[in-house]
Image (cartoon, rainbow, N blue to C red; front, side, top):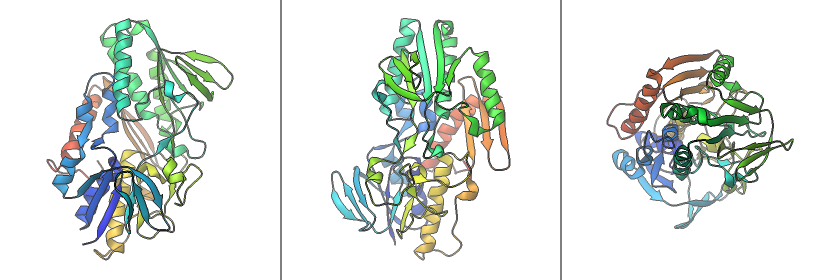
Amino acid sequence: MKNIVIIGGGIAGVEAAIYYRKEGFNVELISEREYLFIYPTAIWIPVGTTSFENVAYPLAKIAKVHGFTLLIDRVTGINARTKTLILEQTGERSVEYLVIAIGAAKMKHPGLEHTLSICGAPEQSLLLKEKIDALIAKGSGKITFGFGGNPNDQSAMRGGPGFELFFNLHHRLKKLKIRDNYEMTFFAPMPSPGARMGEKALKMMRTLFQQNHFTTRYGKKIKYFENDTIVFEDDSRLESDLIMFIPAGNGSDMIQSSDLPQNNAGFIRINNYCEVEGVEGWYAIGDAAALEGPDWKAKQGHIAEIMARNAAHNSAISQGLKSGEKKGYHNHLSILCVMDMGNGAGFIYRDDKKALLIPMPIIGHWMKIGWGWYYKLSKIGYIPRIPGM
């Protein structure tokens, strides 16, 4: 039986571990965290409608069900030429066959420590809850949410969770009958944030912002953050009691300091089959990989899972465990999102042929909650996996 090492215990890494086992590999998953953090449902932690424990799912439980080995350690170095990893606790080791699924780092804005992110370290979701609870206890305040872009790789921009948490917080304040006491502003350096979702989705967002009395600060680059202020490139200032900001993704320092092939943003260059360019037997998937495709392409969880399954399939062919044709990710690129708003949702889909937005009042919110339970239960085999979900 062939051996494979997977680094990264997120959505891409866990999917890879499950499917490499299905293909007949001995699998070792290396993760610096003991749990899989389900970021799509983390939006409800800060507003108190779910708990951290419901979002952080034990990796050991998944490993036991699927029969792969779990090692909790942090990768601090990687060398493609010698095919070696350096681990913080267990030192250097050779790895002939590897899947890199360590996710992305974040763009480093001056003063970023004065912000919190719903897409950052899992613990920040709890810090956001503390901030929000304190603002509610205060009874009024200024709230600013935003996200940034990476000029070297626009696919690394992630704004959807910011919009979702923004709407969920608005919904909570309305339920408490104190919404009118808060100024809520959304900011982004691009003139039309969310444009890659398609014109229909963009128009709906504009309408919702107007209906809910949100203000915006679009089209101005961020110069730096202060403790209670965002300073833009023209030196204009936006004061805030709570700054939630999602920086765009960037290649991790470890990857950028390695000899792995990279694009200008520090993501690992791969071919259509997720094979790392020039390194036989190594794959990169999910946010760590440089995506190729249309301008609107986006790094999302369902794409990461497709890449994981394809990598397992392609590895099995390359290692002689099965016959058939390799599978690529290019023809699966799409934007797929159920954008939760606390009291409903919008189903958003885009590919090369169409861009859809379907409003789902009330039921959409419960559908996303249902997806969260489905995701966890399917990962441990309690319910069957639905193709494409």
